[in-house]
Amino acid sequence: MALLYRVVAFQKPCGPWRPKRRQAEQDAIYQGWGEYDEWGQFWLNAPARVEWIREADVRLSA
Image 1 (cartoon, rainbow, N blue to C red):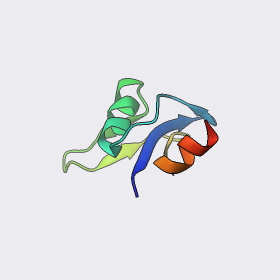
Image 2: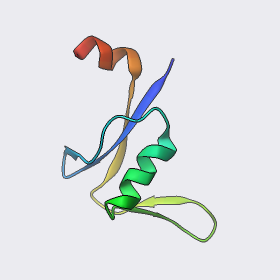
Image 3: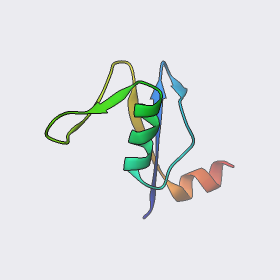
């Protein structure tokens, strides 16, 4: 089961669906919604979140 990830802020997508969570995290950093701390843990600023969905569900809804 493949998962896709994207960043959402204020209930609106901030980037496309990505095959890897790390790519969605990079989208968040680029837009100023996220950062890594000195221990390498990823943090998102409120109200952003990482949303995920099964790839098969995206294809069914298209």
